Amino acid sequence: MTNADVAQVFNEVATLLEIKGADGFRVSSYRRVARTISELATDINELAARRELHTLEGVGKSSVAKIEELLETGRLSLREELLAEVPESVLRLLAVPNIGPKKAALLWREAGIESLGDLKTALQAGKLSSLKGFGPKMVTKMLRGIEFIERSAGRTRLGMAWKISTLLGGAVLAMKGVERAEFAGSLRRGRETVGDLDMLCAANDPQRIIRRFVQLQHVTQVITASGNKALVLVDYQPFGSLRVELRVVPAESFGAAWRYYTGSKRHDARMRERAAERGWTLSEHGLFEGDRLIAAQTEEEIYAALDLPWIPPELREDRGEFELKKVPRDLIIERHLRGDLHIHTVASDGRNTVEEMALAAKERGYEYICITEHSQSSAIAGGLKESVLHGHIKDVRAVAERMEDITVWMGTEVDILPDGRLDYPDELLAELDFVIASIHSGMGTDIEANTRRTLTAMQNPYVNCIGHPTGRLINQREAMPIDIAAIAKEAARTGTAMEINSNNYRLDLKDEHVRLARDLGAKILINTDAHGVDQFEQIRFGVMTARRGWLRKGDVLNTRPENSIALFVAAKRQGR
DNA sequence: GCCGTTTTCGGCCCGACTGTTTTCAGTCG
Image (tube, rainbow, N blue to C red; front, side):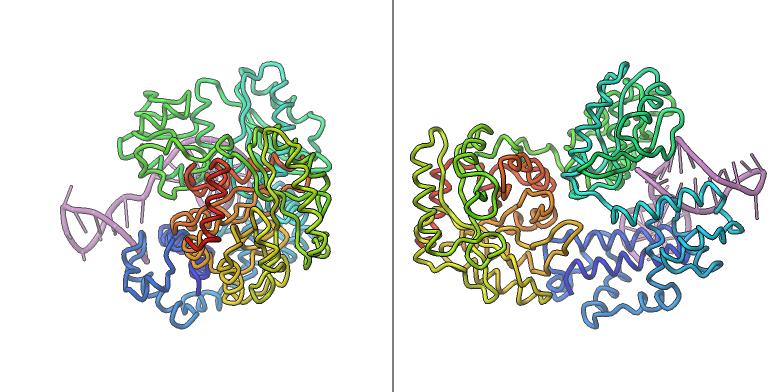
């Protein structure tokens, strides 16, 4: 079992206990164990073998025994006992708004509801009106919630949410009387997906702003609107629809509200603890000692009052940010990046020419790019046959000659074949400046086979980077099971970088994997995998992901000048 | 279930909102 497997079981047990009505603190301790394990840089099996499980934060005697049981037998008797009482499908009811553990238990016990489908049918038929907490308003809300779940499959990709937020933010800022408007929530923290968009604005006349807001052109449904807030559904085609919550807050306490609604919930909980230790209270209105206001106007003031540096939103996940004496000044930002080494053109499945891509990159202030078309096995993606690649190398070199103020390298995104060999011979790879190797097909379910396949590819002296290492497509395709820790160690050993693919469908490596890989010594490359000039801007999402993985400038290969990249390649080829 | 100790129990983050079997439990963030 992997760390993620163990964590999932603990999470499931927590939810099952919650439905059964177990003590809330007991429930949270299971969640805490799950979290600790999922964020662990070490293999849980190793820790268990070394008898060090008890050293983990929040893991006591009882959890040690349960982890050991899981690792030894692959099963957990507590989980099985609970599942004998509560069917697994009942867990999914919790995704519906206004249904928590209590109502889920009620639905299942009193009405025999075991799935979302059951619930929808029963709600529509008006069969639940006798149940406590299922009045007409609740029924309407729940039905809308179920429809939303069905329509959006849960969460929205960061890239789409970003587009919508930009458009909507502009509309709100343009309203008379709005002094300031900002987004909060998981969008601000740069999470790969977003549930609802949380938006804040500062204005004196909240009711007027709310009235205007619900009448905006793209608002298709008003879910609630009262006083200083509104929850609406907005629809911006072709990007899609999303729920947006706007709160109008006073400018004097904007920082308090922004911090609060940015979350994460766990980060906020830790902040409240810190406030409580000092006998203070912290809320969306500010930091208070009794009735006396200590800080509210800016986030910085609040953090400072609690003896903390201002913590960047991407770090607010309670993953160790409270132990920081100061936030690293060189935490990665977009401006640190000097180039992009994963770019497609019309020669394979891109939409722009080499020259167009190079000019667009130069426009962004990049010093270098690398053209990396697909290889012959990726037929659907217009992969280049060996003979065609020879010609393309000449074409790209010719463009490179002509370009001023930007270096254009020639590379490839070569397929990693099922046995770990590459889709081009070494002699051909040797002619290229930089080689990304990626898996595009035959992503198996066997973690050992997948891992071996990638390890083998990394051992090739011409492979400089593993592209999108897990192959996931957010909301579309699961990540293939692969041992990231093993790959990161080998990456560090062989001098191979691991990619953060900034495309908002991929964001692969994902945040926790980024941090793990960094901790194990791997260098990271943040690329866009741009298939057109319009996609360079997606680098933003890769950088956010990198920040969520706590990367600093020095951890990222493409913050280095071009000669240093060339040295990185040469060192591996020469076996240094 | 965990943790720390004033050490084997008692506390663990908490305010706002909402529907409503009207006085608060349940949910949310």
